Amino acid sequence: MSASPKRARSRRLVVMSNRVGPVRGAARAGGLAVALVEALRESGGLWCGWSGRVADAVSDRPNLGEADGIRLATLDLSVAEHEDYYNGFCNRCLWPLFHFRIGLTAFERHYYEAYRRVNARFAHAFAPLLRADDLVWVHDYHLIHCGQELRAQGCRQALGFYLHIPFPSREVLLTLPNNDQLVQALFAYDVLGFQTARDVERFLDHVANECGAQVSGDRVTAYGRSVRVGAFPVGIDVAGFERLAHGGEGLRQWRRLREQLAGRQLIVGVDRLDYTKGLAERFQSYALLLETHPEARGRIEYMQIAPPSRGEVPEYAAIRAELEGLAGRINGRYAELDWIPLHYINRAYSRSALAGIYRASHIGLVTPLRDGMNLVAKEYVAAQDPADPGVLVLSRFAGAAWQMKAALIVNPYDQVAVAEALQTARDLPLEERRNRHAELLRGLREYDLARWREDFLAVLREAPAARAAA
Image (cartoon, rainbow, N blue to C red):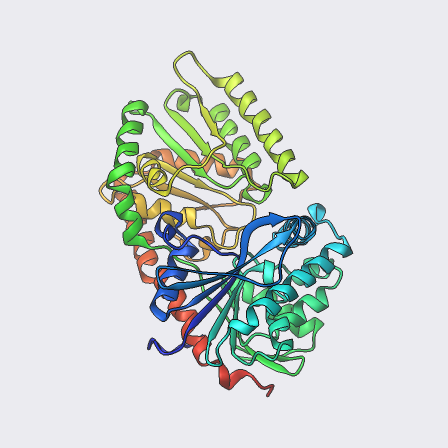
């Protein structure tokens, strides 16, 4: 998708997301918060969304505030909304479905009704805060209907939507009751952004075959509206993460781990505790490495950091129990008095500490069963010492694999192949490690977090020409 490279400072950016992230702590939070806060600060922008609070009684009048020149508008969720909208439709329905896990999807119609109500509530509360020439950027699967509800409120501003998770194939999406209403809601926007070209292809296949849409280049027409569609892969702040890895807490963690490892190689995985991350398959692949390559025993360690999340959702309790059992069996079978093969850690670390852990490791193991992008893969590469870099082993089903061809790309369902990739990574010569890392780092710098943001906003600024159907 072509876009104007010029930055327009006169139009205010309004971001709508499920959660209003930290503003003053954006650099520590990393990821999306960094890019959005910078753009919001530049335009004197407004950030709207859920406050993170759940209350018995809630008001439809937004809580207003300001931080570092950015206006904030938030709503609390009721107990019922949190259960049915957030835990229900968002996390028990859309999340597994969009990650191709039909068997884990809870098709409850009252979940969808709550989702529609919360999207409408957000739109009703935040629409009066908009200016006529605002650029409105709605984020992720929690708020798909928000654009449609804003249009119903009479909003004619340029509206963009970005999906941070994969878009499912047509056959998968069709299993969702009301899938037609969900897809139609996307046509309320002027610009639709996806992580990869493959996500765009799946979206276009669905709307062309199920909605009768007309596709012409990056413009798609259906339901009386024409929208622009493109792939905008999320990047990272490369220089910022490099600094984290080589100073302060990152440097201390690197020194500490190198001393503890005493020459042993470290495999590191960092993932939110989630069934989409392929952690059980990853543990089993590591066990297979130890079984088939006994020479690795005592010479390699695997550290998996997996902070728990969404504890109210039953599927998350199940994956946690499964992983604890696997970790116990692997350590029980292979551990020695002076060596523990698997360190399974259920707590979060700061980004600076993680940067040092990445830098100290010989292998970064990133093998989700399905992922929109996966920024851990990119942060792992940015943290490495170019003179002696580690090796990235990356799932072909992570969006990052489309950009990071110099990683060792694996099928996470093939445990033998993953085990062999780990063995290959252990023995990879220094020159090849340097060459692979240099290629990966070039890609990260070419399409970083700032470019992701600016590419999308440049297209959104052109949106008025795309509002009416052709």
